[in-house]
Image (cartoon, rainbow, N blue to C red; front, side, top):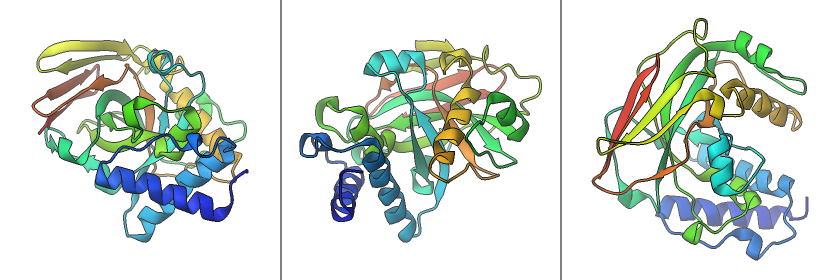
Length: 262
């Protein structure tokens, strides 16, 4: 690590304030070019600590930049990991206030809930399959706090991978009988299809993202506990939304997820 504890705490407060006040900031590596990956995740951990200290529950874990389309869109090759808090959840079919966000985008996600813990190193898709309780569809609303989308990957990690809102569908399915690689997804905005993809767009198999998350946490002495909601990453590229937009995402075998932006 290159940053001291006070700098990490100050940067966490800076980025969380930007999220909570919906005010954009410049990427933090402009002022701290020496920042390394451990620093970035330490800042994210401090943001999580701040939220939990206020009584906000961590509702799940998330993988980001895992779809081939998203990696190409962002010009990166490495997935990143973060978390979502309970206050970020919105009901299926509900409203999302754009006044609370900066420049929101939506992406469809195939998600799982675990029934057994997962820990690396050496976690693989087979272990993930054995640990899944059920599969659910979701839409994540990401909202980078960085001005004009000018950021690097370390700044994104520190900013909790742009987490802001998420909507989970109501249909749960056992993983048996589902082929998550071929599971099709259609994203519609205002009644028009704007993106289509299949689960294989996420690292060839969405469960690969879960294994990578377990291995990432294992290297830090942590694990994915039983009962954890895990967002495996956007299947499609992220689609910009604004007030007045209606988004509906249809998932093969998993139903649909919708929301309105107001």
